Image (cartoon, rainbow, N blue to C red; front, side, top):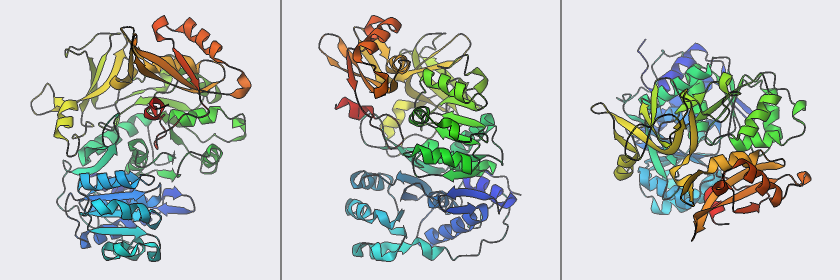
Length: 527
């Protein structure tokens, strides 16, 4: 057996051990590990036949579908770099990313044909398109570079058991320092940027996370998050690594459907973001669902309000809750062990296994307990930088203490208590400077979430000629609660310093969201 060093080789090990086990459950189809192996082998051979070379970028433009996971494995088997984009992405942004990454091939659905046709007007480098769906729906002008997904499904050369650590199509000279994926993420300003993720980076991150989550082959993970979001994508990557099952849903828009899936599929792990938890807690009928199979829930992407944590713990005392913090540039930074959640509900814990973190002030000095500074991350999980963006890479990825290593400057303000537990205060661009004071938007949001009747809250800073910035709060309130602006101001005045009390309060039926489920503060800035 060859020692596995590439991400897809870990999938092959799981497929060899349990070929008939369900790997992906996606709506009306159940894919075994053997199914995924055969389809990914066939796709790898098809991509190679279409001229995809080692480290070529192949874009996958689809919704949350099992074929995304198959594509990820097949592209890596062909030696390529996997680039998954949200199926809701508009043509202009799609065109930009196709050009930015220099995509040689595109895998998509015929339902996206109009957007693809428009995007390709300025992205001439794409040499081939693999379509899922009926050929009649493909625009005539794209036929010369089009191939149907169904045409590769008949390849059967890979039906044998295979060998652990090997792939039917081979690795084409790829080593673990080569890139496995570009994960595009949008910053607070500017165009999307592709985070360069090597096989070694992604394996290191996945192993660390599955270690502290204590994942096992029997785990069934429900993923309702976009696979274009690294938090969603890694649910598949990690399940393939430990040999588990992923129940894949298109979105979390219909919370009743999602909660029924927990019950029907006997889900053991449920990754969520604060929006999902808020939707759950707003239901008055949670007791009608069977959550007895659920072992753990995780959160990252944005911090959970402390009040929501307390309510969750009351409702689900036997479910392990992992509060975590991460960013695409290193996947995961820290986690709070479930046994500490009740004692330190506002903390995001300590560094994940095989990772070192510290906090620096603006002069580069490591700060002491309860001092504020920027979080710095060191470890194999620190990705390689940004594709086609050397200046941006140099800003966040800087030389470490040892020759040749790079550490990640997160751009996030943190503090650490006397026991070493970390507390996220906000992005540098999410900190509000009012009356000469630096205020964490998250701190104000936590207080707002404690107020009776407030479902969700978001805080931003708006320009103010006298104060520098004024604090504006957007709140979604349960109409039955009768909570008004006077109640909100009074509670904030009793629980925040005077300079941290919102100057403006705007009631809003529903807070705008990004495709990843985060509150979209850029849109709130335009309100």
